[in-house]
Image (cartoon, rainbow, N blue to C red; front, side):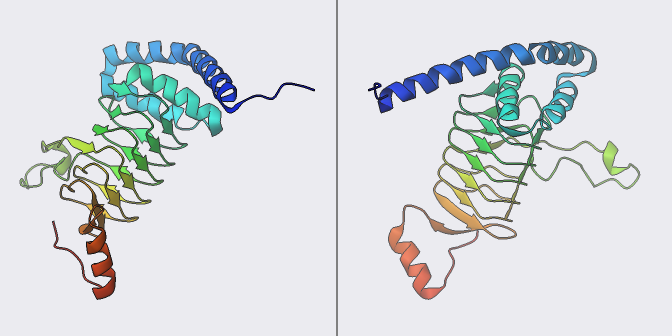
Length: 223
């Protein structure tokens, strides 16, 4: 009779295989990393990075996920362990930071933001640097020529952003943002926020408050 592989042995073998695969992917993306750095010296870092981000977004399946992670770990400000960036998702700035165990769904658009550990972002989500990226005060200049303000945005650890949400303000830790929501103001830790524009409907720590809202059908105050 053959020996039975234990759960710990299987986990160890899987870890070794994953390490080998990650090493192979790092070698495969090395030419594009070098090209990206050369283009950055000529065109600017963000412009070069954005083009390569678009190219790597088109790689399908599990292979694409591993190659994207390998490329981003050499070109982003920070890309943590076990990051999954799905098909069609693009990043517009190389200054983006992805923590460990971050999952980003398909066809997302991500700006110059900090995404902390264990964040889940569903498909078709847009995370942008505020709503003042273009000024509109002057009528003698096209909007495209008016300087704006890029606000720093952070998505706190263990937060979940639902499908088709648009995020233009920071989100605290352990938050849930409903599908289709428009976030224009900062969301506090442990909040569940939904709607356009998004409102906090409960605190995840307040179990009794959740039950009370279900009974009365009431909402919490806007933020």
